Length: 290
Ligand code: URA
Image 1 (tube, rainbow, N blue to C red):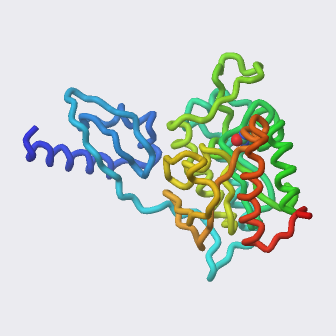
Image 2 (image 1 turned 45 degrees about the vertical axis):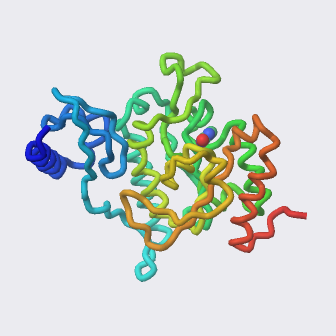
Image 3 (image 1 turned 90 degrees about the horizontal axis):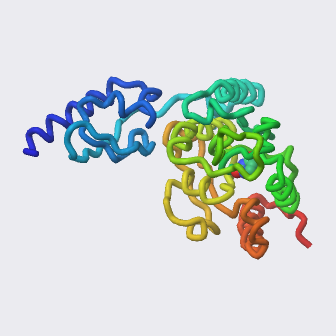
């Protein structure tokens, strides 16, 4: 295609994007709206879009430059008090409970927004609810959750002292037609993660913990925005950068193994413990160490 046509196409696409609300540019909706677009394979607000075709086969790459969302968050000058945080998080949880941005919204029993101490220094983020979480509407209450409780206790903390949430807020199932089946859990896919992303970002920005501990590869890759394997990402801190909201102050993130993976591979517990000790050292926690 001649470069003039390409430039025109680029301008059309930029205009198209500028005219859309963020809500309209989720992967499920964008292909139907992208009349001027031949094929898109890059990011819009950093959310991966599926390839789109309209007539030709050219690939166009753009990023929509939208201002970051303003959610009520704490700032050093204007710290949100506990009551304000509670209100903001409860409103967000209500939005999550009513969410149907992706197909998981129609197969869930309960959305699982997350729970815990909203003034905490430590936030744990898993990948998504499983069978038990879907039934109770609470994060990490199944077998993996019991191990997470022990990991938290080993750090010298309790579940009530930290905040626990997930990247995906609804239960991803391999066989959604049979929700009563056990062993039906799967990791959230790219579309589900993209649709849910702003929720975890807003939760982190409102709570603004000192440390986020990403449990497993899905949470680690998504929040560190790096496609490397969990083994390559774990064991060190990163500065957390969010796509849709500004953090009021720096937050560090560290990745470690998901408790479900530790149940399957107990030999990895030593490495997980080393990761948790980095957070304990940073916070001056003595934990349950002998
Ligand atoms: N696994 C997760 O990632 N999150 C939960 O809440 C439960 C199991």
